[in-house]
Amino acid sequence: MKVLLSLLFIASLAGAGIYFMGSGDIQKSSNSDMMQLGNFAYQEKRFGDAFKWYENAAKQGIAKAQLRLSEMYQAGQGVDKDETAAAGWLLKAAKQGLAQAEYEYAIALEFGRGTQRASMKEAAVWYQKAAQDAYPEAMLKVAKLYFSGSGVDKNLEQALNWALQAANKHMPDADNLVNSIVQEVNDLANQGDYPSQHMLALMYQQGLAVDQDESLALTWLRKAATKGHVDAQYDLGRTLVQTQANQALYWLQKAASKGHVKAGYMAAALMEQQHITNPQKVNEAWRWLYHGNQTKQAKVMYNLAVALHQGQLGLPKTNFNYQTWLEQAARGGITESQNDYAVDLILQQKNTKEAVFWLNKAAEKDTKAQFNLGLIYARDDMITPDDDAAIRWWKQAANNENASAKMMLGLFYNLGRGVGRSEKEAIYWYQQAAKLGDRNASYNLGVLYYNGRGIDRDYKKAADYFYQLAKQGDTAAQNMYASLFLEGQGVKYSPKTAVQWFQKAASSGNIKAMFNLATQYRTGSGIQQSDQKSLFWYKKSAEKNFAPAQNAMGYMYAQGRGIKADKNTAEMWFQRASDNGLSLATQNTNALKQRGSFSLLRLQIDNTIRSDVLTSKNINLASWLEVHQQAVL
Image (cartoon, one colour):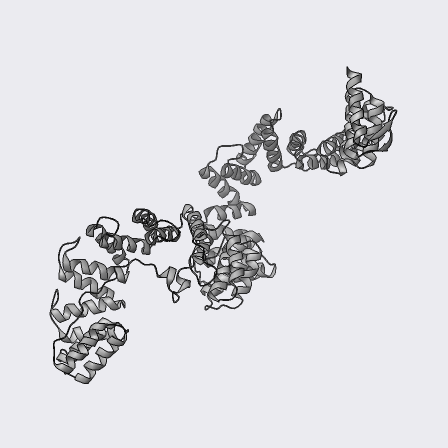
């Protein structure tokens, strides 16, 4: 049966265009076919045939064939035993990066097989090559070499690294070796060896071979850093950046003063974040920033651009080289710069296509870029609008807790854009955004509950949302909140409280609040009646082109309230209001001529959701597009 199978196999190869005779006189074959024939012959223990096939494949440069040929020379299978030839073919396979060959050649070098002399140093080089090519036996061997200092300088960090990798490959004795390394590191650290203290700190910090423990990591970092270990000083500063910025800066500066480049760059960024003005520290920061710029360090170029753009580190604001440095940092892979560079291109109206390219790059990691892409697709003034794409990017940003993206999803459900209209869904997304501090979402929630469209009207909830915003200085919310007190809607009726909130909003420039405050003065509701003060606030609002206030100014001049009656001036104000689309003002113009009665508008509020960002061509995109513009550490 075995002979029959062999004949069938040979026939199939012949049918495929492979011809051979005897023990391997090859007329035509491929490299892989030669390997197959060699393997088949070897399995059949026809070592002479196997040797011929492997030899031909090896001469064609097949690394696995070279390895098998080496093994046959070593074992004397199909050929006279020859350790020198074995080592020669093994070296050829090893030079092609075959991990097993690298490992076995290292063994040959270690014990002097087929070579003139044994060399542990040369063997160590090949053991490391095999380990780097993920050969488990080599990983364990390299770990032992670094632990003992055989053929390499003793290095416990490298020993632990390779021992852990070998343990992950389930190599026998790897766990015991890991334990031995950890014990020696502990012993040395407790004896005051600061490189070991630094290593032990990083082990606790990363959970390498020990349980992760930030407290112990800091303890050992401080010990090593205090003794002057530069890398420990840098790592201690890096670790303290988020919790103890001043201490972090101290240790980073220590390391930087000894030439630790990364520490210098991080120290400069931290000083930038802290808005340092101390001349000595400012000079130090600039030295590191310009050093990083000269060496084309992408992160530093971004920090340099931000420092000048924001006017930090003692210099006035300037956009000198801002876009150039942003672009270079973006090309260097700095995500924050990719986003900010794209936003700058959009605001400068330079190249929207390029901006979208960089936003897509940044959006792989950055939630701000994800939001910005959604906004660009939602509007129709930059690229072809695509509501589906906008929703897709906003959902991705929302999953990353971007408040603005959640607000926009609420707005889309509120308006029924790209999705079915649903106040319930809108409220869900608005609430999610409001929890993250988005003011527009809170305002829209207040409006929804105030109007009661698609949901039950709830003035109490509306009042709560408007109040939270009013406290934060949102003038439209202050005006809305004030209006609720005039009717006792969701709050206790109190014209006096209404006036207080109208005054806050009016003093901050809200034109509707100015108008409402003027009305309160005119009627004496919640405040002592005063035509002069009423006229003052009507005029401030009217001068901002608010038609109801212009109409009221016409009335005040017509009636001589707070000022001497002046029919011509009254007519001028009525006309301005009429030109601004207020039909009531046209009626008052006629009444002025016919000595009829005048009509005034009363309460003016903003009870529509905030959606201008989707439709207005005059919207300030700089206030919506999200940027980082903060030094990155």
